[in-house]
Image (cartoon, each protein chain N blue to C red):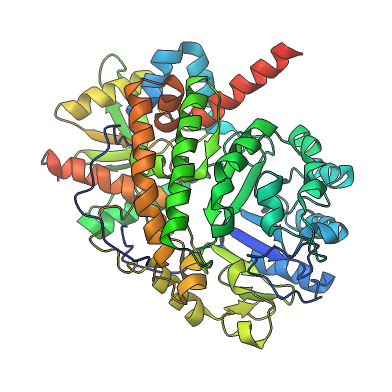
Length: 168
Length: 391
């Protein structure tokens, strides 16, 4: 007789659970060099409705507007935190320039960026931002591409990170 | 499975257009029987496009469904022409077919309109002929097999959808390996959850999966890029993220179905023959719009916790989140079929053992496939490079 039964004590698999992170762009470029950069550029810009693409279920990434709304809604609902949009942020050496990021909260030193075709962080900027994330901030999350069903999950991971380091 | 708190209907992203109830096959497990004769007429088809255009989403993928949509190739072309001329860039088109009627004319249509299709094919001749039969009761394998070269020539990444029944459980290994050997790269396989399964059938199936896990391991070791949904989808729930509400099925919400009459349904599985017996499941029609209350009730029920999965450690990894599958087998969107629960408990350890082995072996393709966000694209470029080198 077949039955419904809850599983308890399931052996945790040895292969790692890993979520796509902001580091993967850089890791990919480091590994594949110029070719990697081209692939990322193509990935950012290509239209995913072609008939001969390899993915069985081509991902449909959110547009910048959709991502902004989704990320900010999760922040507002979970933490009450608002962002100022299109904030110009100074990035210290070796960049020594300002960049425009999608959302930033000045008083908390936190923000986010969602790259689009015309608007993505270059690798130098990302490297500096990464080191700032390990240090005292500002804490800027680069969301890379997200499918809509991931947006809440990805944003909650960032919120958990910020809570973990006491930034919020 | 993580439950969304604030549930509101979202813009439609996928619509299945059942353009005809007619079909040239009589598959034993089909949910669209008995066959009625009704086709979608042109005014209803145009009205459907107008209705969908009113949805807030930027882009909607329409899948021609049936019945067998290739019985109405002219209507498909007519609909696409209308949609593209009136609403440029709003719609993309797909089709779901049993493959019997695929010919150069259809493939030209696909090329012209950048349309791909999913092929329903259970596997080798024995497996296909067991359930996928013609109205006279003959197997349909030969009718489809003759078209496979043309299908793969058109799109080597064509997705095959295969269904396992208790009667075909012993044939799974031979069928899946036949499909890959025949040149397909993507095999989506699922159970007929409505069939009369017993423990012995699942023991048999477990043996088949174990054999297939060795085949899959060897394929990846040899650098062959294959996708087999029973393995791939479950590995992804660990390497990418656990499943959330709406990932497997977002019925009545971002995904809806339209019957030939123009009635709207949560999913094609609810259409049936669209007579009064099924109309109670309808969530509106393309002429007057959604019945929002009914629609929201479906969405809420589908997003609710699945029974009895709350504290189950496989929750988030198991494929319990398809409300349509649940509904067809149990009558409730959130009550999981018994066989699905048994199947997941049997399959997950086999899949994890396979993935552990590939990870331990430091298999390069496994790492790329499941941990690199760029695999799809880099793999495609690689394939193109190999193809052009071979010329």
